[in-house]
Image (cartoon, rainbow, N blue to C red; front, side, top):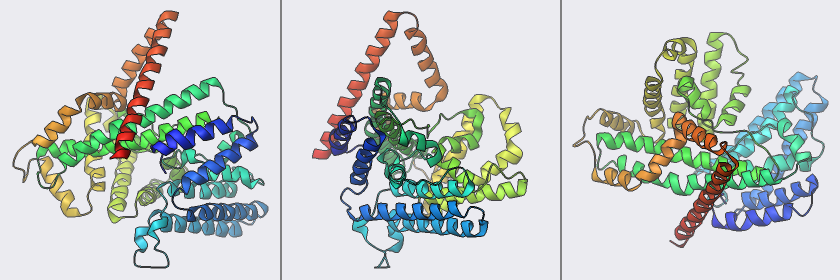
Length: 458
């Protein structure tokens, strides 16, 4: 199940929300959340229910032994490695089961769990790792840990939050009018990104990167659309996760931050799935290593781990290592000279480096990637722009402009600044802004529901 299923948005979510308001105790709310999350996580795949409980119990037992033998570092390290291996194995078998198509004992396509298994495994290891590092205390109440592990709020696209930071909210939280309102707005805006914006860029991507009709402008626009499609898909899922959390009384950190030119390529990478990047950076001690050579090595290892976490393919590994290598060069040599460039030139640098490196994620072979690179500079192309690309862009120009203001931080900050200044002029202006916001939110919600209903019918 996913957040943008009609069954979830109009069924499971409202029923769960209503049930959670019937009692103020955190224990009751946690029970409702666990039951809803297990249903969400294992929808159509009942085998996943056993997986969830068994792996969570294993993490809980390992953390118990580590906490009682914290001074025996050799034993604790061995147990941490066992936990890491079990979670990695879990992730590969259930998240990337295609790797085991030739092994009957491990191949069970009908039971494959969605991408959320990656976040689930990170949470399990993160909890044990925090116990090992002395950042958190062993959780005696397994139902509190289970709430953290199976919560549907971070199941699709994060954010990742360490147990020590979330534990106070698991034990005590309240839902007030502000949280409920902000949560519903976040959910609707996230749904709008997924249902209304992401498909627009998918159509432009398919038209621009059509191997049978390669054009120069089409290759540029097609790859930008590829990035935009997944950016709005993942940020939309995270917005919905944050909204779900607020409705349930939780407050989560941002998982995607604005893309700023001053951060260069390193900032661009960190702005995407920020909490997961921070987790891997912490595990590989990227911030704790000061020696330049050692720091370069751990950054490369971190880049490899993050890329393989997304997809266990050689193309993803190559892209991860290439991105990590550029980050190393920025940290060691390029940050000072690049920081002196004007803002517009920094954005040009970001667009070119991102396309050259992350463009490799789209292609399964070096041949396709090479063909696309040559087309960017008008080599082996018949003309500059195809009718299909032109039609896709012009037909969706309004949504493309809205997407631009969402992504381009200076433009977004300007519009939001003017909006806030207007609302502060008087009580009447404040009322106008709130009414306008409510009407727009309701319009987006209705439009998304109608679109989802039409797609479901088709």
